[in-house]
Amino acid sequence: MRNVSEIIEQYLKHVLQQSSEGAIEIQRNDLADQFQCVPSQINYVISTRFTLEKGYLVESKRGGGGYIRIQKIELKSHGSILDHIFRTIHTHIDQVASEGLIYQLLEGHYISTREANLIRAAISRDVLTFKLPLRDEIRARILKAMLISLLSR
Image (cartoon, rainbow, N blue to C red; front, side, top):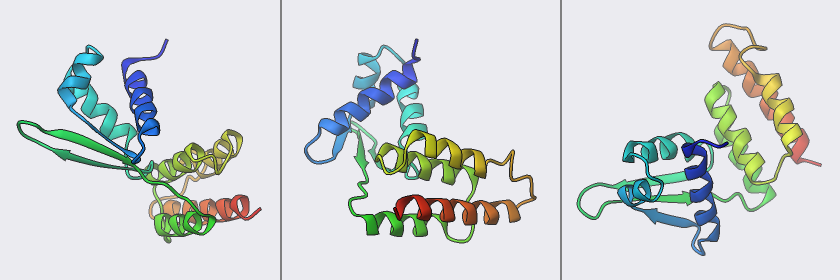
């Protein structure tokens, strides 16, 4: 059985997918009422599952008629994907940012689940047992090489 966070995440992704403009505006309290949870649960889902690293822009407006706007960042062309990879990775990349990039590419169907799992295994901090910042530098090199190889087919 899925937990409430997963259900809310799937709901928001579905609504976002159905949106003609690629963005949605939600009211936190209304969504909390709909899923019979506390508003902080909505905050948790949005702050952990809809991050920039995962390909989402989130904007919130507080106050009376406040809302949360979620927009999916689309990587349309092959060139923009490679540009995005180079902008994200640089010479170093930490575990969280690399996981977000892999997630984004998996969600966009640019890599398969198997490829994502292989990449995650290769760049895991459990495998790269070097001290920082060397670990993040080696992770960046491995990740960049693997993604260029996969996306240049």
